[in-house]
Image (cartoon, rainbow, N blue to C red; front, side, top):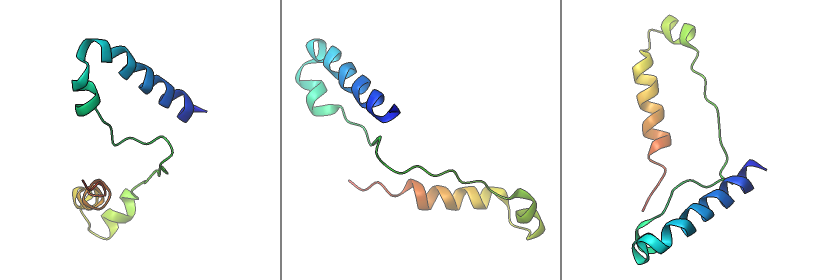
Length: 73
C-alpha cells in the first residue's frame, strides 16, 4: 500500500512542478528510488566484530561499497 501511495505522490509532485519548470522537469528530473525494489535490513553484530577484532568502520565501508555501487548508468 505504501508503494502505491508513494508512487502517486511522486507523480503528483512532478505534475505540480511541470507548469513552472516545463521541459526542464521532463528532461532533468529522475529518481533511482523504486517502490517495488526489495529492501533489506542489515544489522552488524558489534560484539562479534569486536571479538574478531574487525573494525566497525571497515564493515560499514565494505557494505557501502557492495550495496551503494549497485546503480549503474
